[in-house]
Figure 1 (cartoon, rainbow, N blue to C red):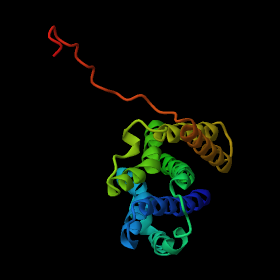
Figure 2 (figure 1 turned 30 degrees about the horizontal axis):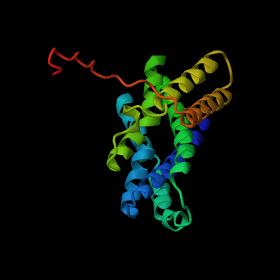
Figure 3 (figure 1 turned 60 degrees about the vertical axis):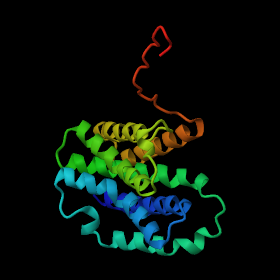
Figure 4 (figure 1 turned 90 degrees about the horizontal axis):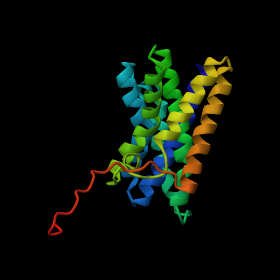
Length: 212
């Protein structure tokens, strides 16, 4: 359990940093930055806890989590004034935060006695839903739902690697590290080489005799 608590703590910090960077691209004030950082850090885990009927919610039971996110948002302004281009920085906290949250979500779901497939799906939700909320707050179509570099697929693969290694008898900490590495490297490769899932579109109707 101590490994999961540590990884969850790291995930909150990394996700908050990603949220700050995302909000800064939109020129938001401190309140907006905090709202986006809060959504990224706690959105996915909150949905997971609601599905598993875990109380209190993980960030309510750990009140230092939202305090840390608030502190990161509050002091981000002076630091980001010296950053010229934010977009290239987004991929790193995005990949790492997704990996950390995905595996903690999967592990907590397994502890709750869920089926492995359900546990993996809840892990993916934990790792990606915060980003969906952040995109909505930034008035963008969530990248998770449109053709874009693989995101949830990376989380899905890494969660199965973690469960497979754990079931094979590998110590928990090594299985977690392996799963994190798979997700991070898979995500970075997807961004670098633009690996995307094909879009599902309604078949176009053949033109009539008059071309209409």
